[in-house]
Image (cartoon, rainbow, N blue to C red; front, side, top):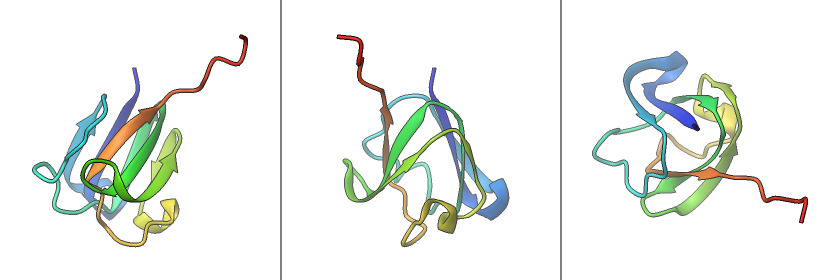
Length: 89
């Protein structure tokens, strides 16, 4: 199961929101996002709800501030799991 945790402050501080499925609108859960921990899976995060705006691809790892995922600002409002295509066909 894929899992990503968003934190409002840098260095995994402040209010957090854990996600295990696609989230089209996270504005009710976070005011801002300044650090992210991807515990499993690969994710695409978006700066606006409903998968709009700048998008960033994140793989498993720790992102202590928005500059580590090349973010333009501290806004993350939607995300989805990225699943690899089956190349054996």
